[in-house]
Length: 366
Image (cartoon, rainbow, N blue to C red; front, top):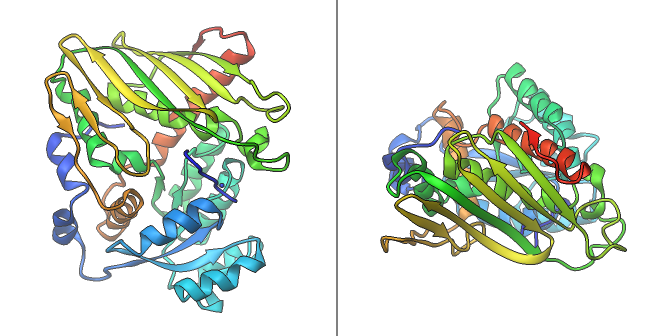
């Protein structure tokens, strides 16, 4: 993600759902009168929580920032002063399980490095709270499945933080997978990357066990996009890692290049990097093409089709839209837009990509 830190860091819907999922009209119609807002606790107070999620939550209609979980005591007074969080709603990682006894908190949002998602999602679910987990969902398919299992066991909803699937132009592109206005997809390109500096030797971004490297950090944007553009899961993947700054990226990839083959015959060329900027999604079809550029920025997502259609719908805030959509699924007891299975499928591809890269870009069946 561009300047993203978690700690310091599929079914395709119809065109009518594209509109209803992200409009205020739908929220007014379907919101239950019992409880208009859900209390949310953020776990991990790094950049994404501090500069994006917390401010965006102030723009939502159905969420309230009620609690924080942090391992950095010096951050607590700042958050309490800014958001009015009482001492009783402040937790450490060691005391996070006590949220089970706090009726003000309905949802726990896991905003930690990927290597910690499974552990803390389980604590959240076992506390009886709904779980919102940032992407990528987990390090392995086994971990992703464990998150799904523990949420099912505790009868709480699980949503993965793929904000782009809540964004209106993206949802229009998703609908094309079903309606095929430009014919069958021959091939597509998905690129997501940023030119990052040296994160330092102790940063999670350079540690494989924590989910560092381009493939985990940014690659899920491209993999998820390839899946929602085609409406299919790939049947094979081949991948190649690249490291130019060898003194920094000693454990993980700085860039990765992937080729996905789909059952329909479509081929996706994906690229991801934490060393160079790239931000485009384009599908080339038998009767034309369509693209989003940029396709995964925090704002300004826009696109164009070969027939001249402008994909330029605007929303006030992506994260606010995402959180309100997820909150309404809880309030109305309806399915979440991006369930755990979405995250798991992408991790399945990542596992295949890692095997391929380790075996000199050999094709791996999925």
